[in-house]
Image (cartoon, rainbow, N blue to C red):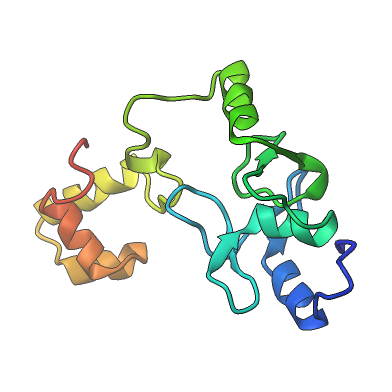
Length: 163
């Protein structure tokens, strides 16, 4: 599946952008770099990284006017499917969140609800049980496939403190 790209976009950039998309579901999921907020990000030209959904909009629709937001009808931050995106003001986006009951004024995310989380609470418990049973951080990291320092921080309760 391809985007109707603007004429000034190079073929190599189109290919690089599309190579980071999974077209398997209703949403076109971004598989490349993810920001702390859970949005896809893409290095566009010589500029810093931009939201992949914003790049998808620019490549399929055109420039984004200053101060405008690109919003998701699907509420999937990693979606880059152009017909799941709409343009609006920040206020429009906030009103959309409120209408859908998605605004959360409490602490944003914790544990596996963090957008970039790669572990689950049950896996964290398993890591702690293995440490309690005397397994080394290295052997646990090899078994589970995570960095040894991650296992150490979990075991010492420097991360995942709420579990």
